Amino acid sequence: MGDPRRLKKKFKKPKHPFQKDRIIEELEFLGKYGLRNKREFWKMRTVLGNWRNIARQSRSLSKEQAVEVQQTLIRKLNKLGIIGPEAEFEDVLLLTVEDLLKRRLQTLVYEKGYATTVYQARQYITHGHIQVGGKKVNAPSYIVKKDEEALIRFAPKSPFTEAKEKS
Image (cartoon, rainbow, N blue to C red; front, side):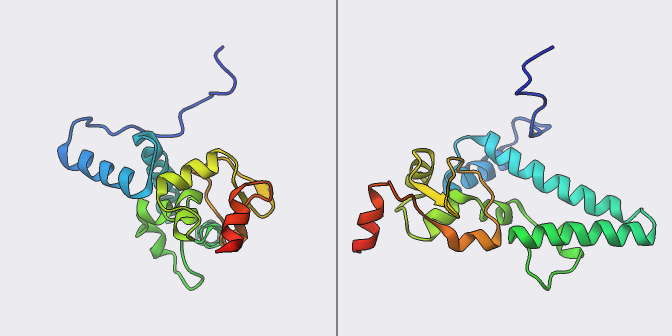
């Protein structure tokens, strides 16, 4: 039967495992965004691919269904802060993996100045020093919604809370 916690993979591996250009690109993203391994990059790429696939398939639906699917997708991406409020449907197909990686909690903690490096931001999150909207989040890959972005701060019991208030 298998393990019920691991029903299916959340990512797709590259079809060609040894392409120098792709490997270099992945390693650059790993360093820039502090990803733990390539699997995290592949997950983000798969999520983006699924959204783009929905966008492409909606073009083949009837007019009413297509508008409904497209508006739902745009609303979702706007709520996540991946696209702007004035974005059109064609902008969904122009999204890149970098747009999605910028919305990760790890990246936002680093950009807000709570950590000096993306790796330190990852450590703060996994050790429970960061909270989003009053709740501890210990997943660095958590995609932060646009309205939650201002609610990122150190947890009340974290020793870094006092250090941040003093500076």
